[in-house]
Length: 198
Length: 312
Image: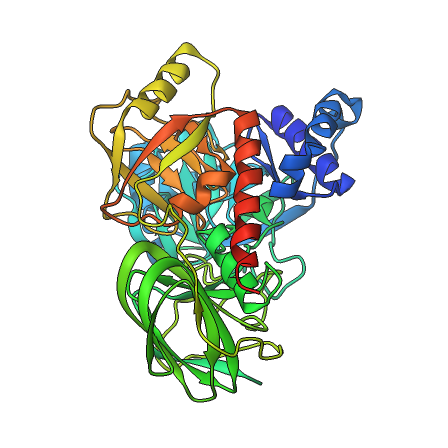
């Protein structure tokens, strides 16, 4: 996870979608790449490819402004964060220290994926990085805040999932009836604030 | 408003259209019909524009009753059906009078059939699409598969069919397809080797195959790919190689990104063939290139035009 590469990826993706080229259905940024999905008609006419080749040469994609700063209140530990104790033991810290270090970083939303509105946030303090569960849980509750290596994330809805769950937020991360539907967008910055330490 | 009511839901019947495009950067799956060609054929036979929502029927079909006089068309997997008391075999188009039922019977070939109604299935669009995304609970009938008692509103449209007319099924329905693929992913000797070996093996769909993707059992060992990669975007038709040697072919309900090594992508022209596969079915991959992929796509479109023009 590299913030500088991510900034260039998001800037390129943002620029391509802003062009509103006909036949472009989706522009999807990930950590180090951008996917451009085009319609069958656009693929057959071949007009998007040369535009993309030129876009890659444009200097504009170097600049990128930071997104919004969003504070997320999290209830850590207890039934809301049932892996907190095990995570603390694995990294030889107290649960309070894990929480403090999780809250000390202003994270970047590198991308959204897995589920509507699921943010991949980084970079997690190396002293509290833990691998995901080898066997995913069949159900993780909506709002659960998890750790997976250098990434931390929030489950927007009940779902199977393998991340180490350390807390839970009441924030609604995705609502199809809302405009925009996702609470967080790629490029936004996120701070976690402890609501309760159980 | 006219409607179709569900008297028997079948195994997995969902409302689908061309998909929920434009929101993959927010993690929203595209979903939509698995066999684009057959779904659009059903729409054209019913007298609809290509993009109207239809019912995707899987393996065991439903029984649907008309509220109001409807024109109904079915394409894709081949089923014996009873339509207003008369036996027929799909693909077909015909009238479904007020109160009459279309009852799906034995499945003869293929996995997914599409039921189009003139005027389209008119459930409210969610985020620009009527497609059902079951994993996220979006669109279609309350974000879920159809159940007995559901009432599907049907859009306005004049009755066009006066008698049942049947067509010859598309030749690839029920066949073990040779899916044309383009190499995708890293440009390294190891990646090239994986692509070549992918195209040498023969596959069957494992039981854990659904609208999200197909898990493929190979008839010979495949090379191990790099265990964990960073998330990268994926497409419908992307072939991933997770550790363990069982490739995954990503389908309509796929996630927007994935972390497994990507080996290949099925050409758009052949995705409708993949969309007709179910657990136990066989397929192979054949190397292709961009020029052939575009030519094949044009041919597939022309075949759709020709087939739809046979009934007018």
